[in-house]
Length: 272
Image (cartoon, rainbow, N blue to C red; front, side, top):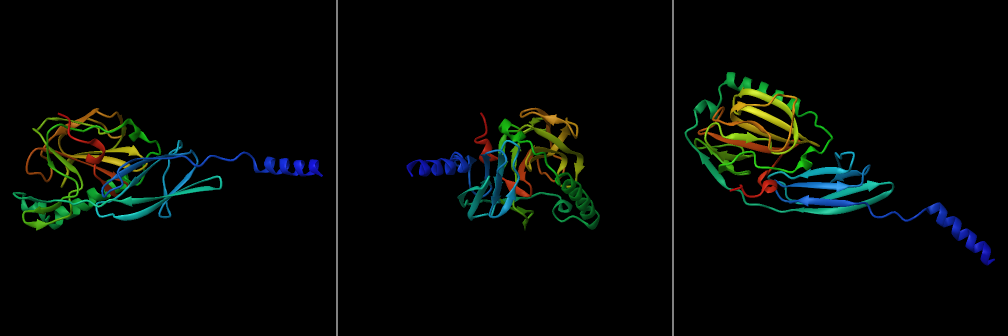
């Protein structure tokens, strides 16, 4: 009788197999308005945030981004081979400033019908480029400041242009002389180069993988070809005053798909 019980128990252990360790999960970054979390889990795991699928790389990296006005709590779920883990992510609130910008040409604040058509065409071009993104986590190179100078505009500030309220500022402005070098913020692929957009002026857009992109506008020149690969810190252009700008500066911004991200949260203080 004892032998029979032993055999049954052994068979059950063989059928169930060894106990699996809990699914791996690492999160770095800040869960706040405008924040970006870089996640790492086991290869092959499926990731969702509040039930919506999150893209993952072959080695299990993924990104979570939170908009300027995104607060509350979200549930992260990761599933692999019948196992599921869940984590609640509380998004911290921030206070944003109001910035007034005066002296802009009126046509740059309230464009005429011809200019509006041009703006729509340029927006469509950008949207087409953003329809796809490499699945390689090129952003793992780390992030560097793209230019040195005085920070003259910050993420999330409510803009008042020539006395008229406009959408918030979704990037970081670095005031510097025309010709100051501009560098790629991280490894990536150059997916768009434009010689003079209505609002943006000379523009470069870089894909860093999994939907994360950086844009550099108001440039005086572009020094990189569309379709080329760049390394973090590689020179891509120079500070200018093209497009809608009252003085020479670089406007750069990060987005995760359509969600604007505060790059300063990743970069830290401006280097001396």
